[in-house]
Amino acid sequence: MFRNFKLRERIFLGFSGIVYSVGNQIFDTFKQVDRAQQVLVEIDEMVLRTSMMARQLQSLKSLI
Image 1 (cartoon, rainbow, N blue to C red):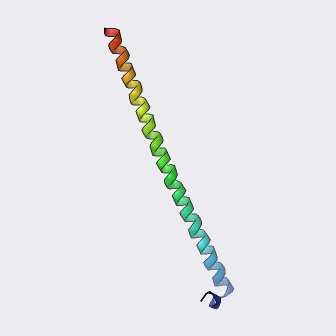
Image 2 (cartoon, one colour):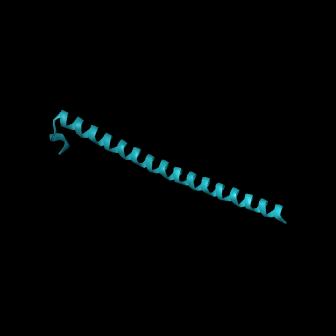
Image 3 (cartoon, helix red, strand yellow):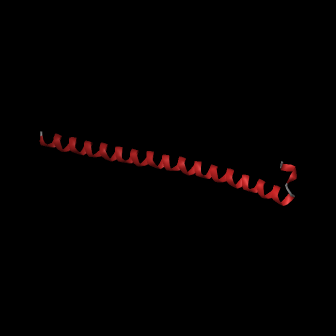
């Protein structure tokens, strides 16, 4: 089947396959970056909560 195509059609099919493959790789990379960003936001929120708890404990210690 592939032999029946003209050279121009073969080049186009090959180029289309490469574009599709690279597009999928870029999409996967963006998903990984998004997941990493979500983890960083969650870690930042955890650090903020922990520091707020420490402040509350310090203020309670000063009252005692």
